[in-house]
Amino acid sequence: MSDDAPTTDAEAHLSALADRIADAEARLAAAEAVDLAGLDALTERACSAVAALPAEQRDVLRPRAEALLAGLDRLAGALHGQAGTRDGHHTEAARAYARGAATERGEP
Image: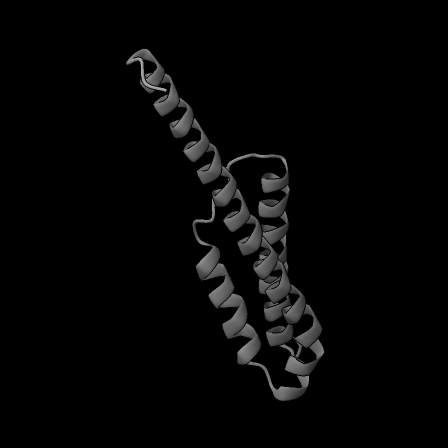
């Protein structure tokens, strides 16, 4: 096994995480369901692989790791925004239903 094997392993984990984030973002943009099962474990593996590297190898991967953190933040923001939108639609629908029920009872 070469000295590059740990770096290659870390890069593979980072690539897998990047692909997963990109897929989730694309699905959200297309208003499709997003399955986040295993994202936490994938993130943990990527972080552990990078943390196990010598400092000089970690430094080389730092920009990529920081970009992934930004991607995770974007994804979290998009999910929170989607939940807020969904909650807003739910609240709007509940109010409309309540108005309809009140109207049927003869209330203003």
